[in-house]
Image 1: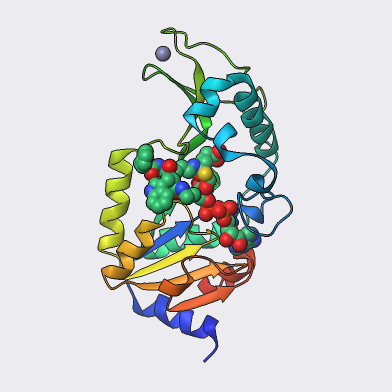
Image 2: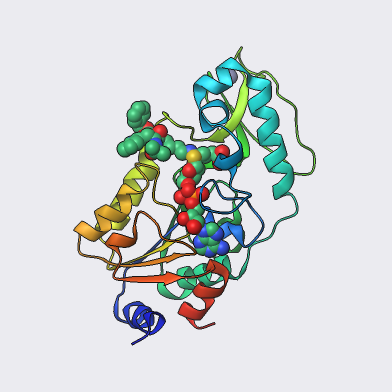
Length: 243
Ligand code: BJW
Ligand code: ZN
């Protein structure tokens, strides 16, 4: 049996579905990944410790903020791709729970209105104060400069999770619960190198979920997979869901 047929069989036989996504699902929309062999991969060109850590922001807030302004400006023109749409069909028709490491908001743009997307690494579409709880939505067509918090002496920074920072406890807890009770986990477009996010796949596997991995390249999570589907998410997912 071909891998895609085996994966379709798992999809039709197993009820509680979790879709766990990473940057690769948005690559087909033109959003650069962090790792992988693409020449656009961000961590091939930029230093994550400098640009995606609280220490890097403290050392040079303008450098970090300007880098996020560049990434936000790229997002102004991107749209969800057929991979996001196929996942939204699983949310609508199969009650699938989406857990994403992505901060780009593309899942949310096509998800059914009653479906929650669990965002492990925050959102690039908001800023938050470094010192108080103040948050602001960022309009991608009128990007603000680095600025102080209007409520306190803190600085506004992107509302994403940087290296060394804790993930939101309630979100991680909800994701952990979903993985513990999943029958089937579909892992899409992630290198599986970042923790604790990658640990969720281990969690689902330990709870005896079947695992389908969709990726252009080999990933750290392939060993956990019952089926590995190599290819672009925008092509493989519609074929899996049979759109
Ligand atoms: C396609 C495709 C196509 C391409 N179709 N596929 C345990 C062990 C070791 C280290 C740690 C550990 N626990 C914690 C750590 C430290 C650290 C970590 O994991 N480090 C490792 C990298 C070594 N983790 C943390 O610091 C986390 N916090 C934490 O643990 O807090 C507790 C703590 C605090 C203090 C001390 C110790 C513990 C926080 C992690 C935050 C990650 N932040 C980023 C940036 C977000 C903001 C932003 O966007 O700028 O999140 S880093 C970046 O990586 C981003 C992503 O969400 C994340 C994951 O990347 P993802 O999604 O997997 O993308 P890629 O690029 O890696 O992979 C893309 C894949 O797609 C590739 O496989 C391609 O082949 C594939 N692909 N095109 C299908 N068309
Ligand atoms: Zn503040």
